[in-house]
Image (cartoon, rainbow, N blue to C red; front, top):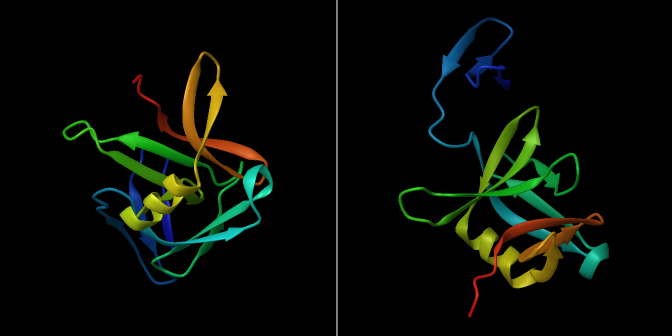
Length: 127
């Protein structure tokens, strides 16, 4: 079983032993997107590289970080207990195709709806 402690260290735990492991970015990869419904009522599910199926919702939020060096988006979904999956580029592009513009505070952002919650993908730039 894979766990992450409060300090951010990853541990691989088996019944016989426990060892610290290094994770370069995220321990899982989101490789496929499933869509049920449409619009605000839709549900979006991500399949990971270890065949976990995780629905994007309040308990499994989608977040998009920005790579400091390149400015490229780096999307993640929480899988369980603070462990995340980084979404593959094709999955992120599918999300962008589903995205709609929404007003959040004083800004208009591009994002997706899943299980009645809006998840921003990024800010829209002024023309």
